[in-house]
Image (cartoon, rainbow, N blue to C red; front, side):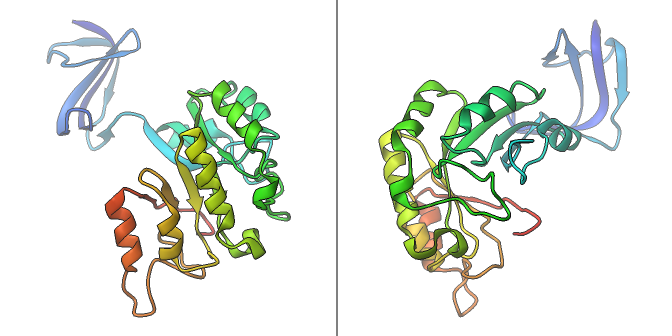
Length: 253
């Protein structure tokens, strides 16, 4: 059998089959051949001894609205060298600038790019000098709903940041309003929780099965640990009912 590409002798990680072990991978016409023959010949052969061979990774939490936002990176440059071929932008754009995001970032990168949309219409374009406006009265629900209807395959959920310095006097109201809007749209909510204005268990109580609690291990302000150093019961309860906890490591959390 002749193939385009043969990767020999690596440790193959195949979540679809639940396989982890030594093996060969062959590619023909851009598609993986399930079981390459041992005598297969290839136009290109890679010796993968000592290497992991796995499908393209998915980064669920990144900011790739470059150059539309100062806190973003270029998707291909940041992700492809790490073996990541799919990325979800974590709500860098809001309803005011989402069209600019969706018409540029997925189109100008090789990798697959999906996204959350920020409930604050301007998104995160002003960071680090200006935080988004999270007054629920300033949410543009009609525009956000229209974008979900227009880009159903691209949009994966709503994003909100629940930090004291962002929500100010509104406390948990931005998150509650976001969950209400998500109920109307039929999508999950992803919430950034560093330096929250309440106990983490109170924040987690607002979340539904399938919603995502980001930066779970951060050390800033209130955390998932109580004063006794033990995990808060409300966090355990949220996990049990289906809330997803995202490590989402970053340089500041």
